[in-house]
Amino acid sequence: MYCVIRDHLGPEKYQAARANEAVAAALVHDLGHGPFSHSFEDVGRRLNLKMADHEKVSDALIRDSEITVALNVLGSGFANDVADIIASDTPGNIYGAVVSSQFDADRLDYMRRDRLMTGTHHGAIDFEWLVANLTVGDVPSGVDEEALGSLETFVLGTKAIYAAETYVIGLFQLYPTVYFHKATRGAEKIFTELLVRVFHLIVDASIMRSGLPAKHPLVRFARKPDRMENALHLDDTVIWGALTLLAEAKDPVICDLARRLRDRKLYKSIDVREEVKKRLGLEDLADGGRTIDRACASIREKVNEWVSEQDTGCPRILADQEVRKPYKQIQESKGPLNQIRIMTRSGKLVDLGERSKVVGAIEPFQLYRLYVPEEDDEARAFVDKLINKELEHGENFEK
Image (cartoon, rainbow, N blue to C red; front, side):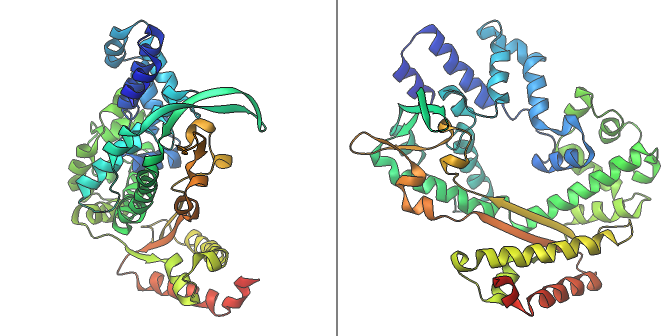
């Protein structure tokens, strides 16, 4: 992408500097991720921990750390400019689109890396062909469909239409096979519950029950979660190393959850959405999607009620719900630079969602799973009975 910007815009100092900022932002935008990435952010959201938010940590590191010094070698204020690009919710120009859009450097990187590291054959993309057919074009910008000017954006040539489709389909395939795999998500749910419980005990001055020594990095972070150095002392190895200590905790919840993670004795998954689909005979989402949604919503409400009535011991049911769109249409997006543009043979720039029937037809990936301890027969029976009861009169969901 850097070469495309440089070759198209020329060697002027301003444009070269902005291109360098985009490259730097793409490299450092995820510096602030805590242990186990987004799972740790779930803990932060539950407990309102600022330094568990990787965007906030990344921003602080880029603006005020040794990274700032390294980046400012390229110019005074360079580090702040990089941080500003990352902090923007909407790509304001082509440089921001390199860092955050539906065709950004991050996705092009992690799709290939995750495919390699997990060994899956899904998610393959023709990276070389995509980059070879990448250029820069102009798209109109404005408010309420009134064009006020134009913006430069990345454009894929006509020959890259199939490679662009494969890119979107590949991302869609990685959701169920890697990112939302039932075992992966089940482990993440246990991880979240474990750390939430550990942090609660530490804050309540019950460190001895957690199994951790007073100077452990997790203890220091829980006591002073707003201190940057405490956040930086946490990584995957700290958590893995703590599991042996946590598995011997006096607190039964911590002890159980830590042992499950350490020994891979995860909760068993009940895919409610798939069960509903199967039992109602609604294999075609185009015909049954709304019916499935209504059934799952009703089941979810009753599960939440049941869970809230349980004691404060080890969680008996963990819920997992997600909706992901592999490609967002422009009316749902963050602006014109968020889209993938295809150049037609006539030279017109068309959004991929409109140009490709394949991409336009992809339904959002949805899941609703419940995780239950294998030995908890009562909880499993409750879920099974609930699904059966809700679907006894499945015709009600058609109304």
